[in-house]
Amino acid sequence: MTRAIAYTEFGGPEVLHEIETPPVEAGPGEVAIRVEAAGVNPIDGKLRSGLRVSAPIVEPRRVGSDGAGVITAVGEGVDGLRVGEAVVFGGARGAYADAVVVRAENVHPRPAGVSAAEGAALGVPVGTAYQTLRSLAVGPGDTLLVHAGSGAVGQAAVQFAVLWGATVVATSSPARFERLRALGAIPVAYGEGLADRVREAAPQGVSVAIDAAGTDEALHTSLELVPDHRRIATLVRGADAAGLGIRAFSGGSPEPLTAQQQAWRAEAVPVTLALLAARAFSVELGPEFALADAADAHRALEAGADGKITLVP
Ligand SMILES: NC(=O)c1ccc[n+]([C@@H]2O[C@H](COP(=O)([O-])OP(=O)(O)OC[C@H]3O[C@@H](n4cnc5c(N)ncnc54)[C@H](OP(=O)(O)O)[C@@H]3O)[C@@H](O)[C@H]2O)c1
Image 1 (cartoon, protein in one colour):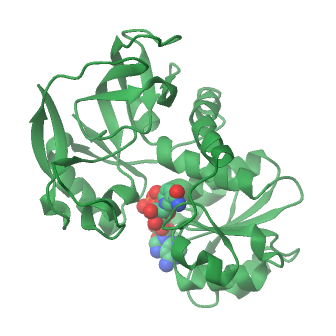
Image 2 (cartoon, helix red, strand yellow):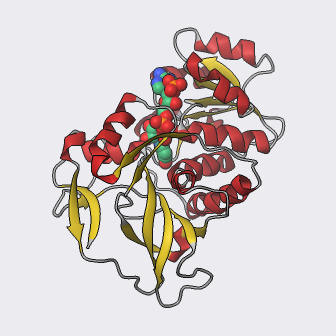
């Protein structure tokens, strides 16, 4: 049997509980994976609480999309992946489990030297950061403002933008400044007076901004500092974007991602794995919890732990 985490009603972390499901089997185009680590993302908690509206629950709903593990079976028509191979996956319907079945296109070989926890930290955050920067055409000559630069999405956005030649200013709490500096960003504390601090940090001006914080402050500061409002994107306040004249990618946006945006999200994981293998990208790991303690992992998520929280079956 497979052990997985699920919920049958929306609510606090306590609604998460362990269930047993039949052993996984890989159908055509699918890969079965023994999970070694699952990544905990804010969206997992938003869906669980009902904050992000989803379909009514009609059967135990499993949690989590990102993880890493070892292939146990390969379905018909799958090329380039083999049993026993260490991999990273995204797009799972329930990565909080000891085994999953995932579409082969969402499974990528994990290079030597990349841990299961690092691999599990990639999917949603790096996909989102990479696609957002591509959609905003961030590159040399840009000065990018990243709100919530110390989070998983923010750290990925900082690193890609620096690699692609932009100057990056990133907001965080002061305790996280060293981490942001190590990634190549100019750190600035969020809170009252933010726009003035960003002007001081970037006297040349800010040409593009990403909101991964979702605060009024992040939105208003971006509107004040970025001349072209179509170069501002929110990843959290999607429902408000059209009214503000800015862009949104998921995060409650009524506009679905385009095929190109989805393709960029998919491309991000193998690109990041190659960078990690070359020691040109860094993942900050946070607390690790046993699978059975998924509720505690969600409490840590909601309390704001530093680094990517992972679950280990
Ligand atoms: N649209 C999408 O497709 C998409 C995809 C992924 C994530 N998201 C959303 O993006 C957000 C960030 O995700 P994540 O995975 O990066 O989360 P995370 O790793 O938990 O990071 C959250 C960050 O928010 C920062 N923060 C807290 N209060 C803040 C404030 N008042 N102003 C600015 N920053 C503040 C924290 O910084 P300090 O620790 O320095 O205080 C922390 O680094 C979440 O709301 C998530 O749901 C959207």
